[in-house]
Image 1 (tube, rainbow, N blue to C red):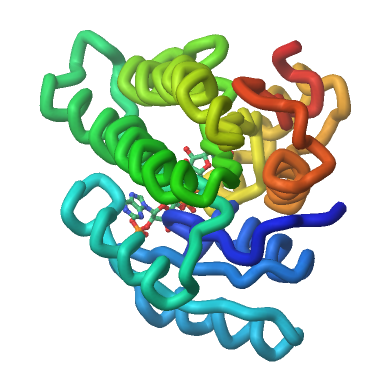
Image 2: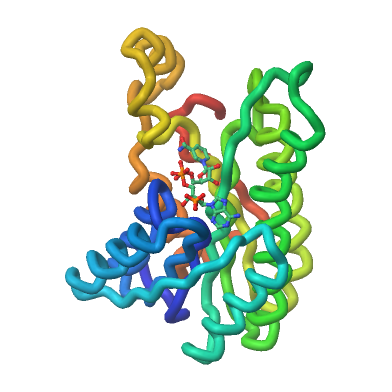
Length: 247
Ligand code: NAP
C-alpha cells in the first residue's frame, strides 16, 4: 500500500487497538502521533518501540472529548509538521448496564467519549485537510453500532452515531478530496476478551464463521487500507472486521 500523506494522529493510542494501529501505520512509513489521556508511560514506551524499529513517532496528550484540548493538540501537530494527512478516531469507552438501570449520566458519558470526540476530530480534520485539499479519516465504530447489544444502549447509540455521522462528513469532505470511512470491529482480542471464561469464549466462537477472535492487527490493516491510496475511490463506507459475525 502507498500513502501520499506523511503523518497520522491516532486518538487513544497508548494501548489496545489504537497502539497496534500506531505500530502498523509506522510500519508503512507514516509518522504517527500517539494521543493519550492518562497513561504517559504507555505512550512513551510505544513511541520508543516504534522508533527502535526504525519508525517515526511522537506523543501528544489530550482528552479527545474536550474541544479546547483536541483543537490545541491538532494545532501543536500542524505547527510541528506543517500538515495533518490522516486521522484515526479510535478513543472510546464502554459503561455497560441494562437500559432500565442506566442513568442519563451513564448514557452521556459514553456519548461524550465516543461520539462527541469523533465529531470534534472530524470537524477539525475537515478544516485542516480542507486547506490541504487532501486527507483521509477513519473512525473506529463497532459491530454494536450496526446490530445493537444487550446492556449497551449507550455504546450502540454512540457507535451507530459515528457511522451515520461519518457518512455526512464524507459528503462535506468529498469536494475537498477528504475521505471519511468507518471500521467496525467485532470481537477483538483485548484485555476485555482475555478475561472471559472458557465457556463464554466457546459460546461466542460458535457464532463467528471464521471461528476465532480478531487480532488488533486485523483492525489496523483495515485502517491502513482506508487511509492509503489503495482506497482513494472509497468514502462514506463501513468496513466490517468481525470474522463474519454480522454480515
Ligand atoms: P482500550 O484498550 O480500552 O483502549 C481505549 C483507549 O482510548 C485507551 O487508551 C483510553 O485512554 C482511550 N480513551 C478513552 N477515552 C478517551 C478520551 N476522551 N481521550 C483520549 N483517549 C481516550 O480499548 P480497545 O479495545 O483498544 O478499543 C479501541 C476502540 O475500538 C474503541 O473505540 C472501541 O470502542 C473500539 N472497539 C473495540 C472492540 C474490541 O473488541 N476491543 C470491538 C469493537 C470496537 P485511557 O486509558 O487514558 O482512558
